[in-house]
Image (cartoon, rainbow, N blue to C red):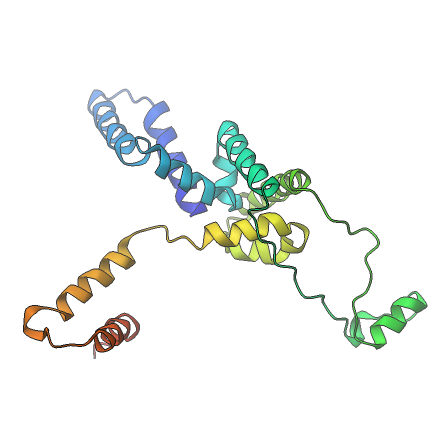
Length: 224
């Protein structure tokens, strides 16, 4: 979704700002921009949901306007204050033999020999505002790395790496990033169901119909 918002932001900027010397090109860009506003701007609720999802992707975060970021962060803080965010505490990471180096503090050696977590004196629980500030730094850093290397890592890899430091935002990220960016899959499922449950096959029971739709979606036929 972050890549989608990134692409839309660049397209919108091109259609709005890049004026050509060719009147025909300008007319075409104007017509395209009007359609763009019809599908992506006119529906404020849909647009805000897209921005909310993109906020948790470094690529999308980098192209959001400051006003949109502030609006989203205000909503996050409000949800956190109302205890509407369920944070899943990760299991402590165990130390293996290679992680315990000779000469380490004796307490760390002792805990490591028991396969327990090595204490981290610098770790502390951040408030939601502190998490938002840290996320902003990490997201921009990740975006700069993407643009410099030309590689786009998976968004979930970012949260697997930094999720322990951002537990509140990680819970929201997993919630919103699981949203399907398009309605094509459910529409395809309804279309398949309509075909399978047509008048000529009206005696199909519900369970058979459900399994037929599932198999139609999962089985890939290889043309030979």
